[in-house]
Length: 231
Image 1 (cartoon, helix red, strand yellow):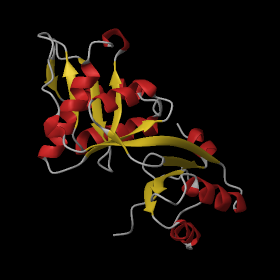
Image 2: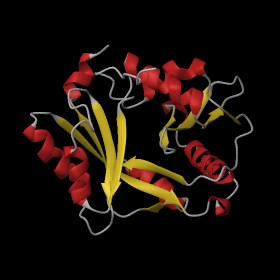
Image 3: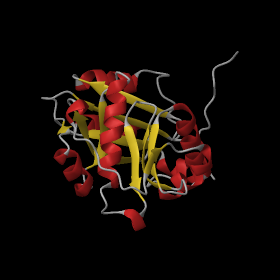
Image 4: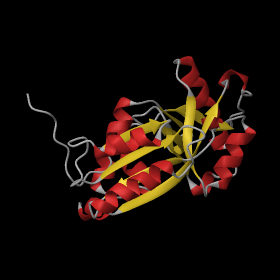
């Protein structure tokens, strides 16, 4: 069988991770012939070890993309890790709220509420994430989602969201606590990326004991115009 061919405009499935202590190694990776398909829309997310400078990954990507006349969009995130979720206090659930999971029937809701969603490619990606990786959801008495968090293909907590009508009730605190405990029980670290401008989520994670790791994680979208051109 031949290798799986990803659509050239699907930056959700064309995703790569690169974490290095040596910025030169990252540059060599990008310059390796055949390593990346520069004619597609794709993401690289990653960072450098401490002491390398927080701008290393983005700067190298921009320099190499510039030689190829490729447009980039760079987003910056903090990485948060909880050192021991077993120490988290027991969450208090509202009597009318129960813990559950999202199902494929909720994919349209996820696609509508995700910052990076709203199109057919993001919907397909979210459906795959729902089907393959853990998620956690708080539901009302009728089983309708109120607040949730997903896990992406890199094992990272993602798309944490509370419906506007149900905010300021401690739901996200409960979801983060339970998700961290479940990750630990499965033998995985409890970590995620939070946008540098999302101060409420940063404060909540720090209140719960999550530690912000040094430096920044960069999400670098290559050929964003190509990605937006699809359905």
